[in-house]
Amino acid sequence: MTKIISMVILVGTSVLANAQVGINTANPEKELTVNGTMKTSGVVFKQPMEKLKADENYTFIIKSPAPENKITAYNDSFVPNSPAPINLIQFKITCDPSDKDWVNQFDTKINSSKFLVVISSFGFTQPTRTFTSDWVTPMPQIFAYSSGGTWKLKADYQGFAPDNSFPTGIWTLNLLVFDRSYAKDFNSTQSLNASTTGAAAAPLIQ
Image 1 (cartoon, rainbow, N blue to C red):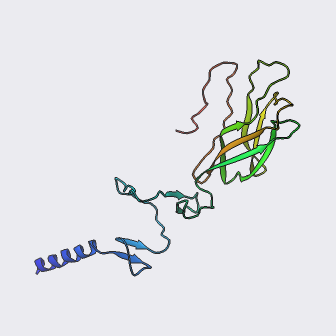
Image 2: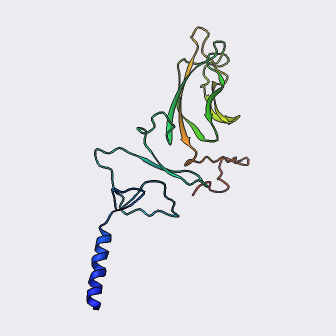
Image 3: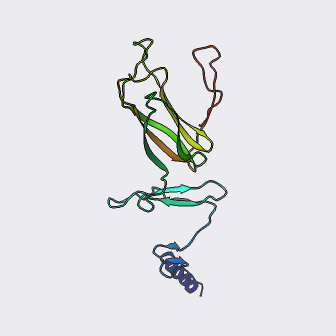
């Protein structure tokens, strides 16, 4: 009698192991298919993870901050007009004709609480010179800063300007815009204490 019961249990286990279970669906596509949202305290992925096939596109898996902790998939083909995890935005800014190279404040209208902005590269259409010493090399002041809830841009060759005979200059500023849900920025002010060498007081990341 014991042997017969053991055989029945083994057969039942084999059937369950090869079955497909569906939650909120009558046609499960995998061993477990959930049609709806799922809450779990942890996810363990099989190693090695499955690689994309040659005809498959990429997808980012993103977790939003607490307390929501929502996991979503992003693919540009799904929502082509929405922000991506990493965005490249280019601005071409024509300067004031009286100064020709000075952008004191340009409001990008990019929400600084939601996005992190980095100027990755830049270009300027006109040569610049100083009227006091021609041998001085012009150094641009170009940076992005948060003010009033949005990202602002500054671009200028301070103390320099294109010659009056040149047309008004145009800045090309290429921005990398990161979603703050998975990017961080760290600000640290350090002093060299009248020395030429120094070190951070503590590692910002490690």
